[in-house]
Image 1 (cartoon, rainbow, N blue to C red):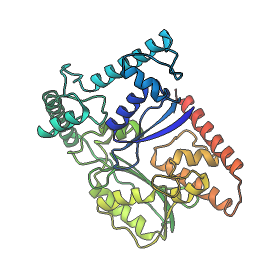
Image 2: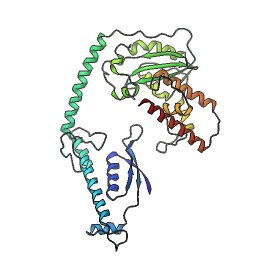
Image 3: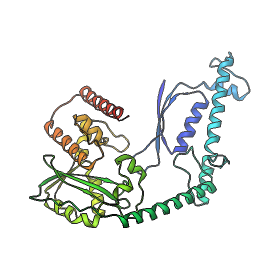
Image 4: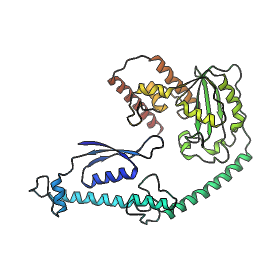
Length: 373
């Protein structure tokens, strides 16, 4: 059995996998995994068996079915199995090129479908198995635009009627070492907005927890809502960033060390929100934890970054009743990972022990997911 890793554009990977299935090579095919960042490439992993020998393929072209031994015809059941595999592969190829909304064939090949969409100033879905024809895609986009306008009007009305909550103010001396975390409406500071900012000191005690209402134009964030659980209706009474910024700036200006998990992400949002970043020490716990977890990133080079949930599971952090994707809870988890790294600094761990620790972390993550269900 062969294990094959295929990487490329979604349509290229799908066509290659279909070709392997057509000749009966594929034993198991994984789901496509998107590459990190802005890359459109995806990866699939294939368990494959050795294909039929060339003489058999030549015999098939000549209209006769032969096995690897050129003198012996293929058994009827194997020949029928191969024909069925080719039929299924052809059905899958044609299904990818048929509009799921109206059933009309978009093109004969994926490349032709892409060119047709580009000529109309449109683009097909990210999943190459769902290619809308230009007219259906235009209708869908218009329906989405109408729904967005309705949501925008409703949000503006709700913001105008809501009484704003006061901004919390920190009393007493401000800490020199802080851990901060943010929850946002998306992944890009230049286009998305802050929702919450949590800050704790070097001992894990809460310093401040700011709730921030995005501008009215930002009326929905479904993907982020599925992660952090913050809905647009939850934010209508929260203060705007203009009201929160002075107190947030005061805390940051007093800090000599700022700690975070993927801290660059949080700093990008703060900078685009008009917060001046102080000239102090910044500690990114994600970068410190990656070599300890010990998985290489062959595509980008270096060590593969891990989520905060994975890091917390690795060090045995107890989330308590809060759970991840709460700004304050994430701050405390980040601090727990950092303290564990400091306590185990210089420790020599063999590959077997490192693998056992990773496996234990994954088991804890699986148990936590099972407990939610």
